[in-house]
Amino acid sequence: MLAAAGAAGAAGLGLRSAHARYYEGPLSDHFDGLRFFDEHGMAPKAPRDMLRWWASNGRSKWPPRAPSTFTDAPPARVDGSAWRICFVGHATLLLQTAGMNILLDPVWSERVSPVSFAGPRRVNEPGIAFDKLPPIDVVLLSHNHYDHLDLPTLARLAAAHPMRVVTPLGNDAILRSYIPGVRADAFDWGDRSQSYPHRQYWTV
Image 1 (cartoon, rainbow, N blue to C red):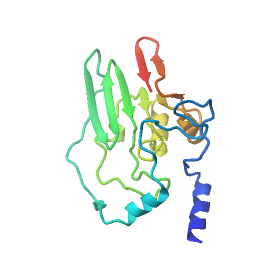
Image 2 (image 1 turned 90 degrees about the vertical axis):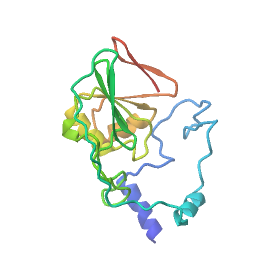
Image 3 (image 1 turned 180 degrees about the horizontal axis):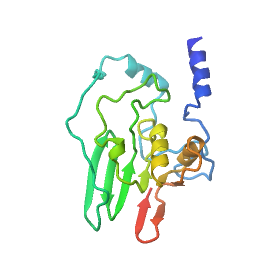
Image 4 (image 1 turned 120 degrees about the vertical axis):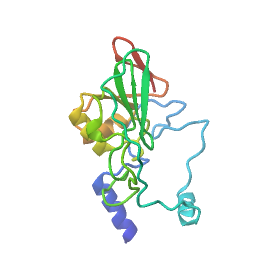
C-alpha cells in the first residue's frame, strides 16, 4: 500500500522518470529511441543494487550543518581574456570571462529533491548569496538530476536575469513545463551552438 501510495504521489507531483518521454528523435549511437546512453560507459545499476547499497553500513553520516567561512561577491563583469571562477557548491560554478557571466548547474534551493520536505538538504550556504549574483548571461545545465537541474532556482534566475539556458536534448521540455517562456536551447552530444554572434560557442 505504501509503495502504491508513493507511486501515485510521485505521478501527481510530476516527478521525473528514467522512462519519461521528454525527447523524441532519430536513433543514434547514443540514443535508443527512449533514453540516451554512453556506449563506452558503465551500465546503469539495477534497483536491487541500489537497495543493497541503501541497506549497507558504508554510507557516510550526513551532518546537520557544516558552515563555511568562505563567501564571494563577484564583480559585475570580467573583460577580455582574463577569467574568474567561483565555486558556489556541489556542481554549481560561476565563470566570468570575455564580458560574460556563465552559471553551471545552479542550485540555491535548500533541498535537491522532487519535494520540499525530504531529500538531501543543504548543510552550508552557497558560496555566493543569490542577491549578490552579477547579471547572468548563460546557464549551462549538464543533465537533469535534481542536484544539477534545480527548477525552483532556475525559475528565480529566469525572473531576475534575461539569460539563455544551454542544455542537452530533452531538458528544454522540462524547463518549459516549469518556466513558461524560458529561453532554453537543447543540443545533442558534440553539437556546437553559437551563443552570441560575436564570438561565443559552446560544445555540448
